[in-house]
Image (cartoon, rainbow, N blue to C red; front, side, top):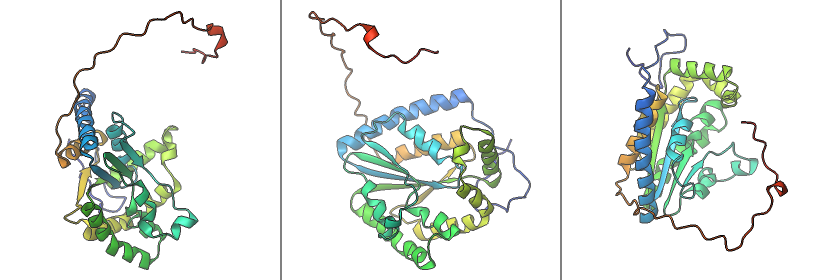
Length: 279
């Protein structure tokens, strides 16, 4: 079975539906993910010891799998040194600020990695397509964004940008699954439904964004996301190649013996309120 080709300038909805890509076997996926997550722990220790500052941006179509990839990256990492930033819509006050101002406080200090689940590129995508910014604001963003990112890189920040590309047909399948799954319905916002109707407009906005912001100092890396599991593995493996690191795994830990009771008597269990054991 051939893979569908993810492209954000897909034919308009209504074209012949493509078959989803061949799923990767669960055992193969879990084994590969476990191996990559061990390497991520090593990478995090290297970032901490070397005092590196890392920013990873995740952008892409709705339902492209950005959140799932971020979750697999972070689930084995120390949250004190790896943070996820997913900002809500700007407040009225934030709308009056310099556009990048609300993102700057979330940039990493030495030894930290910050993952942006959507980022300042909202202006080039949803704000542009949905009319949430003016033409002047959009054009200023396109001028200033490359300079802003070059400034971040010059300051010592390692900036990595991923675009998760999903085909029209696969996005349709994921949206329909969200509609029927109560645990996923919250992921399908009115904005997602509106973006679905404006597929071509989003494609044009993405192309224009790449034309202005795919710069040498901070290029875009496109992830084929029609298979969520493959996308996660490929993204993590690529991320590991972006920062040369060494294995700083500490020596094996010897568990010390527990302290003697020394006359300590535990209070009666009846004095405590326990959670009912229904399972």
